[in-house]
Amino acid sequence: MIPWSKADFGRAEKIAARRVINSGWLTQGKETEKFEEELANYLGVKHVVLVSNGTSALMAALIAHNIGHSDEVIVPSFTFIATINSIIGVGAKPVLADCDIKTWNLSPEEAQKYISKKTKAIMPVDIAGMPIDMEGFRKLCKDYKLALIEDCAEAMGAEHVGGKVGSFGHTSIFSFHWAKVVTSIEGGCVAINDKKIATTIRFTRNLGRTELYNPKKHGAHYPFDAYGLNFRTNDVFSAIGRVQLSKINRYLKHRKRLVNYYKKRLKSHFEFQEVPDYVRRHANMFFAILAPGNKRNKIMKSLFNANISSRITFPPTHLNRWHRKLFQASRLKNTEELGKRILSIPLGNKITISQIETVISALKKALK
Ligand SMILES: Cc1ncc(COP(=O)(O)O)c(C=O)c1O
Image (spheres, rainbow, N blue to C red):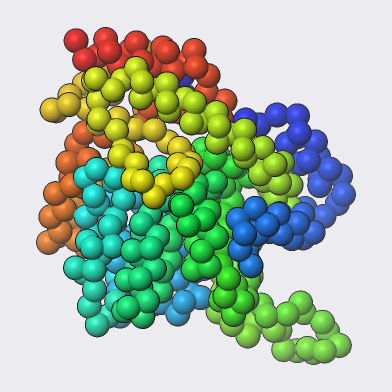
């Protein structure tokens, strides 16, 4: 089977994991601090806080921005379910907006339509690792005094002409899940310049513990002086993440090569995500085609029969069985069109050109 994604997980990652296991300190500690420092240096941001995954990074960011009951957060329906569930998880209301039919990202103009007195934040998503319209969103959030929480879970390494995604100082979250450009098996982080919010996120990830318990100092009072959950990561994952981050340039180059190969050979058969001029580097976390007419499901079946994995990234959240009841009134034309036509095909740090050749032949055959 040609997998949808394949991580590059080899000797260096195993050595790093073994080193931590042999050290006897496996939970969140020095390796995590080092990974945080290296990420902050790589991104060019003041603070990085590592957490258990991208979903908990989103929730911690929302909690740190004091977003909860009776608050609204504007978010695209065309995203991975975690973006929207994190808002529901903190008790706030996700207000779903449509995506742009060409770039597949939420635009500031579309988000602006949904701003109300209850809006506290906008949460745009860098779909497939393509930077959002940074200037537009920063201006919109400044004008309306809203928090900008960027879900760049898929965009590690991506660059806007103004700088790296995650370097702009507003709250940005990343995921290190297995299929991402850089993986720590599971993991996530928040990147931010604001020290106060970074500190709150540190408390939030550790059940609201504001200091290490010291019996002499604290006596019977445990220092749980904030609200929090267990969003901690561990040093084994962080050690693996550090090795992966050191290889990011190679991964980004490889992914770009595969995507260019796909595009060159498939351009007369399918449409792709359009890349605006402000994008200096796409992270290519996944690659998707838009099938013509109503052929998507037939193509997906043919790929499956040819032992090739593919995925729908993403089915519209407002039409999802569980979420439908929450968003009954939503009619999001572009999101629904993409939901019918999109198909994400194999791409990853260990996917090869020869595997991609096989996918291309199978796609062409499926169209006949
Ligand atoms: C856009 C987006 N947001 C959030 C997440 C959640 O990240 P995680 O799977 O690490 O919880 C993902 C990851 O899959 C994602 O693609």
